[in-house]
Image: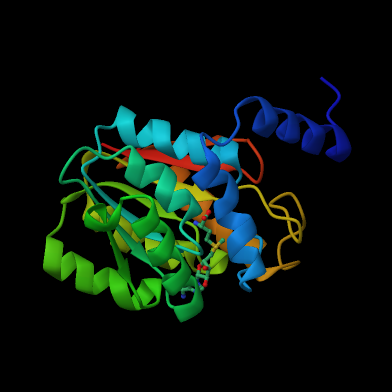
Length: 221
Ligand SMILES: C[S@@+](CC[C@H](N)C(=O)[O-])C[C@H]1O[C@@H](n2cnc3c(N)ncnc32)[C@H](O)[C@@H]1O
């Protein structure tokens, strides 16, 4: 199939349109947040739907997300949790954390979501200490892309055997792509390294779903 960048984006828009946001809360969440000053960098509805499905598929009860923004991806995942399930989502920006907390409350998810107001690299070791190794069913990475290789050892420790690591932007963003030359962007280099670390890690079965900016999925053996 001949897939020009324009055709690719139109295809992704088509998928977002057909497999749309589930309801008004999700549809309004990002427009409202953007009006309040949050950047327009949430996952697409197709990726949100994928996160929802994968949460259910692995029967996740405990999820750790790095990069909450306004809680769009978090809402998709938290809604898929069973009663007493918990999404722990890490977000150092107080505007983002405040807005996402409001959204989670409005959606009836207060008891299922805890926002950790720290950076990923500060929060991860504390969560490992608090929750224990092998205690998490799903880890979703969507914060600082060039830090992905640094998140990996922490995520691996947290995940149980059979747990799922998911990372957004595994093939690029509007500003960079993994197929650009090495050294062209720190995020390109960080994500390229991360992808290769997963591919070479005997403890993971990994692949990349190339919707939107690429979603890496790796199951811990
Ligand atoms: C791409 S957005 C997350 C989008 C969100 N997952 C969604 O799809 O709805 C990245 C978020 O990471 C946050 N962030 C920035 N630096 C961070 C860090 N060092 N650790 C964790 N999160 C960080 C940003 O404030 C931003 O809200």
